[in-house]
Length: 246
Image (cartoon, rainbow, N blue to C red; front, side):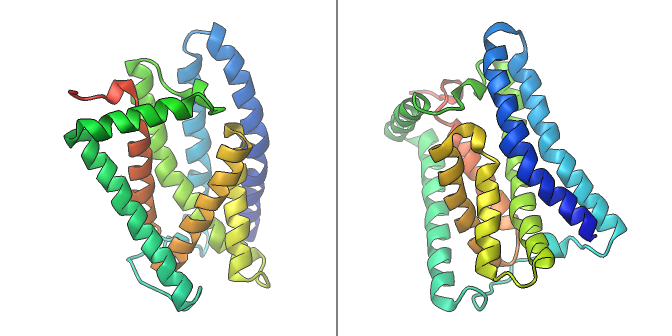
């Protein structure tokens, strides 16, 4: 089991931060001159997301690692690990964030004002984002991109929260829970290097920290998978392809 943990950890440290970054730079050139370059890149992302999960499931089947140890358990509130005050602050932030996401998702379909607000905000953000070329431009690409987003919502939570927190604690037993959370969050941020330093690494590390803390408090990865999916769904609502009657 320990060898398997190291293999996945080394992959997370090297593949996305280095290989993934170089692949994205190549993709930005290819997408301008090659037909179907975006679709091919999407499939490559999907493979890259699910292969570590398949390997991890192999560890579950062949070793003493269990699904419960990587977060597939029922919700069980635990405020003792991170402290009562901090735990409830994190819970409050999580609930507030969930309500905010649901407000905009529902409002997008019911309010033309919110719909315009989201579309304008996203258009402004896209002008500054490093990863804008990756976004879909036709119906076929949008369908595959939806699967990319769904895959990311599931696999990232399982890998970077459920598995990584358990693996780091197992491999480095002297590391405090805060050290484990910070390390897992930073590795999660590094996985998004291709998006740029601020949007990719820094902001994603902060989000990873909040999600890791939520996972520790909730004791289950399932609520985070749902929240991650809702966030990804909201992120796509500003696309012109998702517009509804104005």
